[in-house]
Image (cartoon, rainbow, N blue to C red; front, side, top):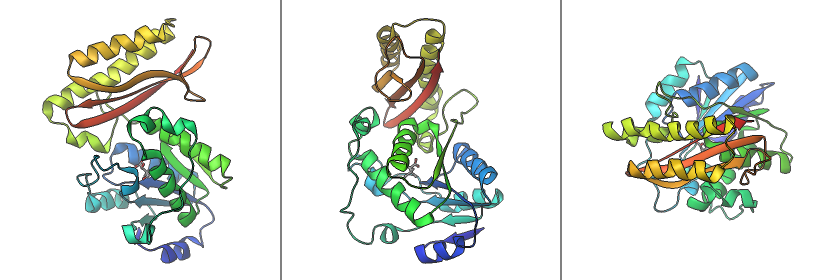
Length: 276
Ligand code: PAF
C-alpha cells in the first residue's frame, strides 16, 4: 500500500493503471467504509481511498474541530485490506487558494440535509469534484447511508458528463440495526442504547407502508411523537419519492424514508428504501 500526499505523485502513480476505483472518505473508518473498499476492489484493478476532513462542508457551528481523526488506525485497516493507494492531502494541497469557484446546486440540495446544514452539499460537491479531477477514476463508490449525498453526487457526475461510473453500496449496520457512522463514537452508553430507535422508527414506517398503509403523514407524526418522548430532537423523518427525493404521493411505488435527529449533541441520520 502506498501513501501519497501530493497531486503530481498521485497522478504519476495512477497513470499506469488501466482501471481505478475510488473511495472518498473523511477517515475514522468503520465497517461501512470497509464495505465500500471491498466493492472498489471487486470493480477495478487499483483501489484508491482518500482521507480528508473537508472543512468546506462543515458550518461554523458544526463539529469540524472535534471530528475524529484516526489516521494511523485508518491506514492500518486499509493496509490489512491490501488497498493500493491511500491519498492523504492536506488543506493546502486541496485548497491552495480560497475556493471561489463553486457549483450552483439544484433545489434538491436545499431540502432535507441541505435545509438543516446550509452549505453542506456545496462543500461536498466541491471537494468530490476536485477529488474526482485529481484521481480521475473510472469508478467511484458511495454509501447509501448518506443517500441524499449519493443522489446529488450522482446527478453532478451525470449532468457534468464526468466519465465515471458511480456505484452505491448498502448501509452497513451494527448488530442491533444502528447504521455504522463515524459520529457513533460521540454517543455515551445510554445514548448508544437509545440510538437504535432511529433505525426502528424508520423500519416501522417501512413495514407499515409495505403492509398497505398510505397515510404517510400519520406514519411520520407517530414515530416523531414517540422519538420526542424519548428525548430526541428531530430534524426530519419523512417519506419521499426515491427517484426525485420529493415528498411521496400515494401513487408512488419507489419510496425512501429518511431521518435525521439529535441525541444530545450527536446528530444521527439514516434511511430505508421502500418498494411497494
Ligand atoms: O461522506 C463523506 O465522508 C464525505 O462527505 C465525502 C464524500 C468524503 C466528502 O468529503
